Image (cartoon, rainbow, N blue to C red; front, side, top):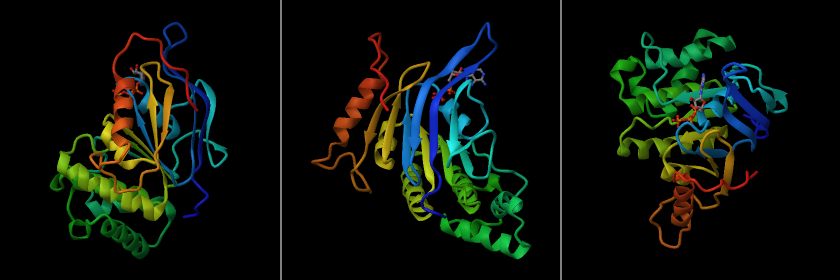
Length: 263
Ligand SMILES: Nc1ncnc2c1ncn2[C@@H]1O[C@H](COP(=O)(O)OP(=O)(O)OP(=O)(O)O)[C@@H](O)[C@H]1O
């Protein structure tokens, strides 16, 4: 993958749902740049518009105002350049793990041999080589998300959007998945946008942590994370705990006026 690809720009985007008379603003005027190969975590109260912003970058939802571009081209619909991973496992139950990844590769016109080789390599990369012939119902939640991650990277997506991908997993599996995701991301250098409710997860993973306000959401804070990975919240001398307190304060329901948008 080219290092300079996968730049997402969200320019003055407003998203509304409903009709003119009863329109709800799901996302207030938002500006955001995701630089190629960076890992951004998006955190905010429930219903603030995180999924809406992700769905717009995925091309599932069109902005009422503003525009979203990928490497300069406006996003007008779903594309293989942008992979999406949701909390609920979006695998086809009638395909094996290998079959699910092969299905994602169909659009590229590889020979059957090449398609299988690529799918196998992707499964090996997420440690699922021995489980290639299993069906989703035979896989654990963490394994299913590994298949979803492998599928996205196998297609060479430049951008990976993840909406609480590990939200349904137990704490131990999450830790394993964090390490796996960082390893695969480092290798492929896709641009990642990761929505989470979990402040600690954001702090452990991301280059940039963006905090959204309560609905209608807008970005109110940006933390550029320079701490080397792997990170630990408990490490002495780390300022992570301070940032954590700061974010938890922002997320606490409040009647105070909200801070001005940050870019
Ligand atoms: N398709 C839709 N039609 C109408 N309203 C919608 C639609 N999708 C989202 N909304 C509304 O837009 C707002 C933002 O929703 P969104 O799902 O983006 O929030 P969120 O921050 O992802 O929430 P959560 O953290 O609970 O998943 C909410 O008020 C929601 O009800």
